[in-house]
Image 1 (cartoon, each protein chain N blue to C red):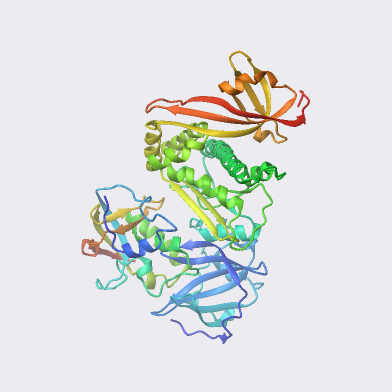
Image 2: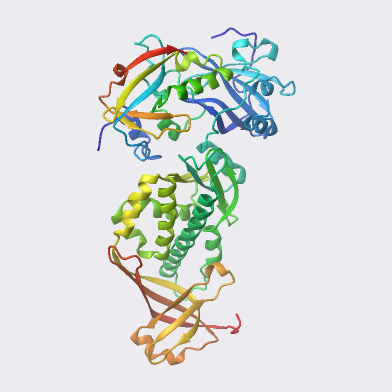
Length: 144
Length: 422
């Protein structure tokens, strides 16, 4: 299964320090997923991983962090996403301007990319394949 | 971004700082702990952004306050509003990590939208970052090995199921013992090969033993991470790979190569095969507990770092590889010690090393080769010998245990008598 990732050249650049994301992916076929997005469906940050969003929010130059930043943050459960947002907004009142203002749902499949295993709040990362267009699979369901 | 009442200061006004860890991370750091060269603790707190910059507030705090915050005893609002903090800074950081518009800002002038809520208690997982390991290595001035576990309900925030931890650390320790032996043997063989004839230079086995032994000294908190440092008092030189670094590289290669059967076969030629039994136990724990096992090493002085992760699915694949492993190889082992049993007719012997350090005592039993058998009558019980043992190990696919045969191919009596009670 040697698929080319959407950000393959970035992954190649960090391949000397980590084997991102090959050792991390979790097998699945289809899955419902939730993501924070902006209301404007054309907003460039809606389906961009952190490394492709400007200005980049970093405090150090670290290649391993870059690997995480090439994954798209998704949630397996709406409650997981809402819970995380409610935690963040208590501490960062302007968080919506970087993560998004709405929550969207979509069905992703193993043809879209590799995913990491869900953590305890159902968050996982997706490393999209070259031709993935998951933006077309998501629709807004409510405002944050 | 919000306009704030501020006093701009030169961009190099802050002391040099290193990141200890991210406390809150979502698609990048949001709250991070830094330490200055003067050992002061600072928090970088993200508050705003525009198309060019991310804006951060930076304030001094104490380790105790950070610990109280992470322990949910204090909110972030309490930390930032503490009147003992001293100056509060604001900085706009761009894509190149350049600090722009650094300023001092009074607490009462901070816009409300830049302040956390009064009940902003910590509800996040602490992030286990490379910077944390790097900063520990800098503080300790040695290379640091971290064994950490994640991706399982059995591994919590700074806690771990005791059975997983105890059993896996025991297996890791046994694996290290075997790999260490192979490393010392390899170094000894290299030393003997390159030694000038009649040179009085001695192989320093003891310091190599310390360089390849670890002392546990603490843990990191996200998931569960055990920290180890070499038992040696290594001298770190900038950008120079130390013997400890070289050992760790050898140690991690064992794990790395186990995912590729051909590479693994080549690597284990020189290694005591009991190590594989312990490795199988460790892999079974990883596989059955569905944890990810990670080894990370960093030496901030030599700038050497190496890591290896084994997920539970990979552990299953490696276990299959090991069960199907077949090998038939011989390697030489160099030991110094005494004979404890000898049958002059058959050439069967028992030999054990004599070492001040119990960790190095090694035993071998097998047969003398035909030339050595002829001279066996010369062997004295109270004399020390340098011996070379040819160890032949054979395992066929599906067999659980390898067949091991030792043969002494050289022994040299040393000019040293030992007391038999030694």
